[in-house]
Length: 70
Image (tube, rainbow, N blue to C red; front, top):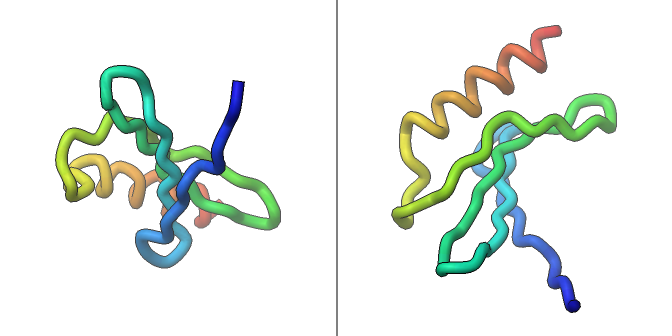
């Protein structure tokens, strides 16, 4: 079984997205942040359109801000 590298993209300050392809042409996205060398997974979802849905982005931002404020 061969594994490729998962594409990763910076969405904005301290908010990143990593994507993985599943069977059935589905694409899973996970939003994450990094603080003091720790990677924190904030939200995962199946993306159905080109643009990241606003509700998923808002949830990722909310969780990022909560994590970074601690």
